[in-house]
Length: 112
Image (cartoon, rainbow, N blue to C red):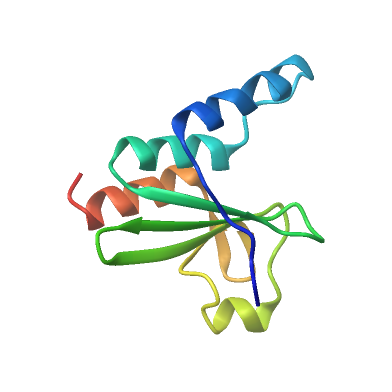
């Protein structure tokens, strides 16, 4: 499957915020998460799902890579238990993971 991904920059993420704020919405957690990881030295690529509001982040630091799904609904159960993503943020079939919890996990894993 050919997925269209875009490498995120702090400038690009900053440019997204005013649109949410002017419409009375909080800045989405995937944006805050991405900014944090970029500041920690990670490369972050974004894939926007075509049929849902889910965002998939492909994260890389050196040779280490992982995939994170941000969503407001659980993934297909079989996909989740088969590990189609390394991390799910939001409501999953196996529980709820917050952005803050995942950032703490990454901080421990990479000794940041």
